[in-house]
Image (tube, rainbow, N blue to C red; front, side, top):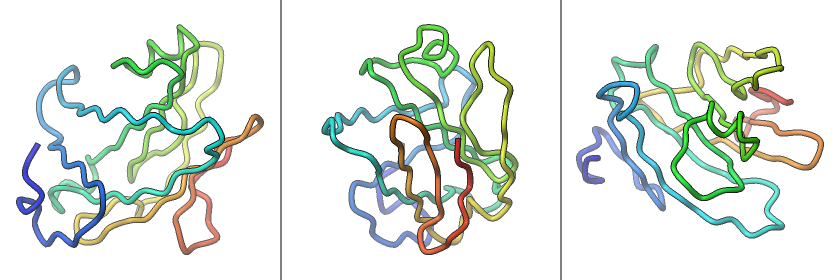
Amino acid sequence: VKAYCGIPFCQPKPCLVATANVGSHYNKYHSVFSLLPSNTTSIDFSVRLWNPEEWKDGELRLALSSVPLPSTGSYMRTQKTGIEIVISNYKSGITPGNDEKSDWYIEPRLLSGTHWQDLELAWSDDFISLKMKGKSLYVFTK
């Protein structure tokens, strides 16, 4: 994790978390735990790639879990404690469970190293959706 000012061409964002996409599959993730009020139905957040040259490899994984412990997406699915959302330029969506088919959505301009992408994640009992703020286009709805 680098300091806030270590990000090239950075514009201020509140609650900034910076991670470098380096290391092996098991140690390249950075976790931030946030307890949301039980009546929360959406969160707004902004993402930006650390290195603009890695636009095709950049990936964000967001875990929503009922258990506040570090875990992988596959473990959460098998234990039925949460879901993992993948956001990238080559596929975005919810990682499928053991008996589910994968529904990946492609939005090639979703992640950028030159500007912040504002996103809204919303959910209810029936659906979960990811939307680019300021656009009527949903990245996915499930």
